[in-house]
Length: 94
Ligand SMILES: *[C@@H]1O[C@H](CO)[C@@H](O)[C@H](O)[C@H]1NC(C)=O
Image (cartoon, rainbow, N blue to C red):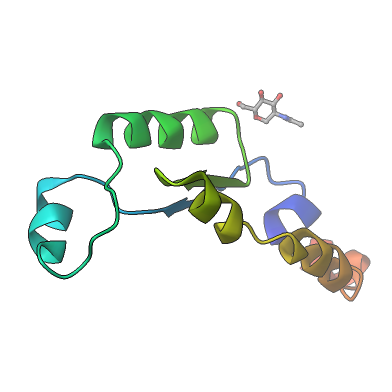
C-alpha cells in the first residue's frame, strides 16, 4: 500500500498455497496430513504467472473448495479504508 501511495512501481504477489508435492513437504507430512498434494511444477507455474501478471494474490491448492475458502475478500476493503487515514502530502514528502 505504501509503494502504491508513493507511486513506486513495484508489485508484490502474496502466494497462498496448499500442500505441494515437494520432497520436503511430503516427508514432513507423511502419516500426519492426508490432503491431496498438488503438483509442484504446476504450482511453480502459477507463482510465476501471478508475479509476471502482477497479481495481488495467488491461491493454489488441488481442492477448488479450499482455494475459494482461502480467499480474503475483506483485504481490499481494509486497504482502501486504511489508505484514507494517511496524510498523503506529508507521507510522500518524507
Ligand atoms: C511499471 O512497471 C511495469 C513492469 O516493468 C511496466 O509494464 C509499467 O508500464 C510500469 N508502470 C508505470 C506506471 O510506470
